[in-house]
Image 1 (cartoon, one colour):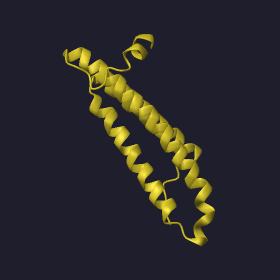
Image 2: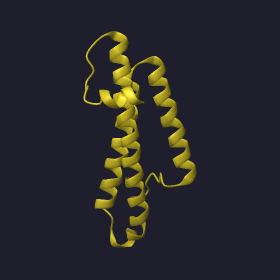
Image 3: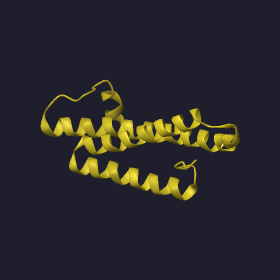
Image 4: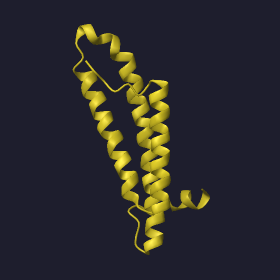
Length: 112
């Protein structure tokens, strides 16, 4: 079985750099959909890893710890990209003078 091993140090570093660059691009362009693309990509990767764990055979049980680490890393990246999406959405809403999707974190953005 082939799987996308994001627990590998080099892969993790490259994904982190790509995520930071996408967040920076979305913040500079004031377009929240760029952060949403990264969030959607990490959600898809999480679903793929969960399906792979669910379909493991007895011979492939040695992959279970690696896939479990990948799922934890997926959740961390989802957390990062979700908050970056909310942050950029708030910036975009203030720029265009419209209501943000979620204003419940206004106290957080004022302190950042």
